[in-house]
Image (tube, rainbow, N blue to C red):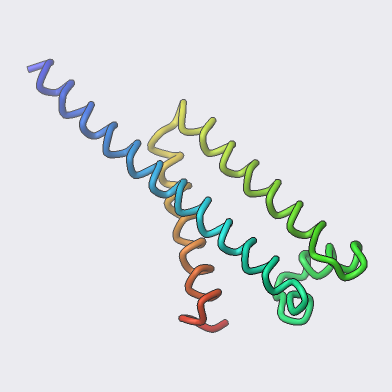
Length: 118
């Protein structure tokens, strides 16, 4: 009985870990896509950016997107790194947090592609 329960728990943990990694990858990929578009359309970004912090960072950098992209990248790396550390001790909670973040990133992806409007 213990071996069977142990096997079920292992399968559950593997599914949870796979889910976590999928959500983590979605966050990374959408963030990368957002950064790509920001750089590709950097000449228009100030005009269309909706994030007031992003506008403020571009103002600080003389209208350039470099500081904004650097801060955005550092934020993403820190968030993804925190998730990996959190996952090592709290897989269920970390998966829930990663799922919520991935959902928000998918909404951002839909917005960036014009599938939804704000």
